[in-house]
Image 1 (cartoon, one colour):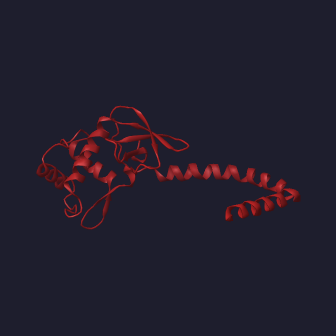
Image 2: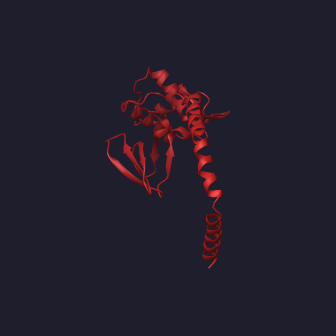
Image 3: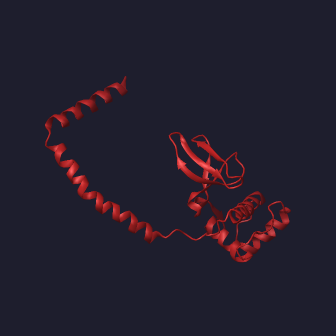
Length: 180
């Protein structure tokens, strides 16, 4: 599993794996205990693939930071997130020597280390970017197969004048009901 399906939910401990979408939100499985929870729209949710770390020159995606930690630790767990502030900052400086010390706080480093260890314990160690070429090929194939079906569906609708006038009347009626 890649980081595209791993999320952090504010107010909830640990990380979660996206399972499925529901009518009011989605279901997520905890990487800590495996319990499934219902997450609604009122929760603040962050995908790990969308998080970045400030450096002096740019923002580095979290997946790159995890990759550097993995290379340093040989794919194994790293120091505990409960280590002292000085130990955490020293460790992080060893991984990312150009991180912006003014904008990356000790609490951020603690969270990154905790997340990394949690991912490793859950068996998620692939921090590479998803293969975009494979996604493009898969996206192109369904489009090609849908084009002929769309043409067939449009042709009968345009030959029925009553259906098009009914649509216009329905649209006007619903627009009028929205105004009142």
